[in-house]
Image 1 (cartoon, helix red, strand yellow):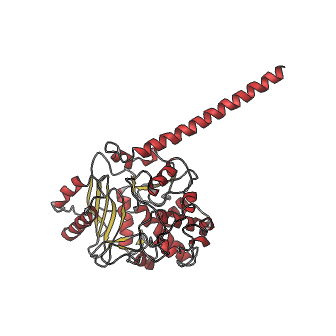
Image 2: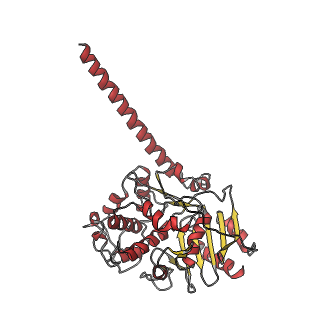
Image 3: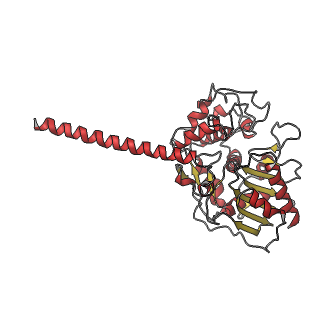
Length: 387
């Protein structure tokens, strides 16, 4: 009888412990979901954008053990008068301007600091593109005209079945993906909930099955395309993105602070928008691309990849903004003018002819209003032409 009682007690204890564990797990999920639901609220957005690791699962991206690459200060530039009004109107939180590789302006706003690791949003896409350029040169990815299913077989028989690596780099996959941030039922917001609740981004991508056009036939900005690229990279190398990006891009650059990625519940990097760096380190990325992939005394990204990825090659309509391999080319651009761009006002703008790099972060809740994106580019050009 005593042995029966002991077993009953043991089973009870195990069940209690299991219930506690499940409760803690669910509480963590609920906490992350609540954080996502208030991520962009007016009273929290600024702090959230500098503390994304408080709301999401993360993975470190090692900066390596080498010294920080010098980013010297030049003569302070007097910014044009229009910039001050723009900073206020666009809820800018950081602005770093380089000219000929020197910091000529650096300012931080709304209580943020130079040390803040700030969310990249879609600026992260350009980092993955740089990594792919290295892997193509090394032969890990044989050809941009390979089908993505060659490296990510789980995408077979879905929306990406006929898409090539080049198609997806160009955002010309033809896959249906609703990117309306204001619609809680949109694909982009469903994806956000997958991320918050610890689901699988790979499964989310593999479950997509609708297309609006044949792959390569037309351009439409589809953020999940970038996650598919990460599936290609992981399939080609058998290694996680954070490890590869550190080895091939981040450590060679000699960044000031170690970045981190947001991840899904399986530790898979949120490559389409989950990098977090300081604004000065974003500027270093721009300077490397201004210098055709050469930085810190070495060719980090192949020069021909820099040229190809920052050239408008996607099948966009005449008069539209240009798109390369996960880089934007502004309307009316001059040669060597391009940018990485993320929602809510994140930019790395490069103007090679002027020797200018502008890295800016913001918490602009009105970023989707008509004319805002064009206004931002106009401000960058005013800065580039007047300092």
